[in-house]
Length: 204
Image (tube, rainbow, N blue to C red; front, side, top):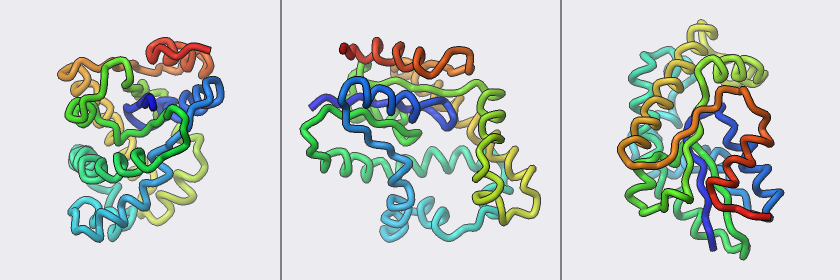
């Protein structure tokens, strides 16, 4: 079984690219974000501190804090839950090669797992691209930030957290030697997916 991994940060086009590659090459698509709530519950049951906080705190408590602190905790959160991701990947028995994506795939964790450089790619967005696209997502304000006393401030804290997170991911890529691409929103998703396919050595 071959495993192709797209890491990076939110709103970089990871899921769109993974879906396209799964369809083009008959890959099994595993989306980490679909399992995050389950990972939070599992981590909270095991008294993992960040998972406990995620399971107990309101949006007000999470997003009205300093973005620097939020970023630090986001990195720790993925370190806490990464073993759960690995367990799920090992359970997949579809007989297909796997394409998987999520911010959980930190370059430092990939290095520890011995993931080959040609099987991992980090995608992070240009800040302006990230913010403009998040604003278009109706559920951001209607669901996630609905309980915040100042939803606009909470939103900008969230965006700054993700911008800082993207910087941390790119720094980890520099240290580990993994490829890191920035999505500036200047090329169509299909063209980006084709470039990712070339990086992974996928052929139709």
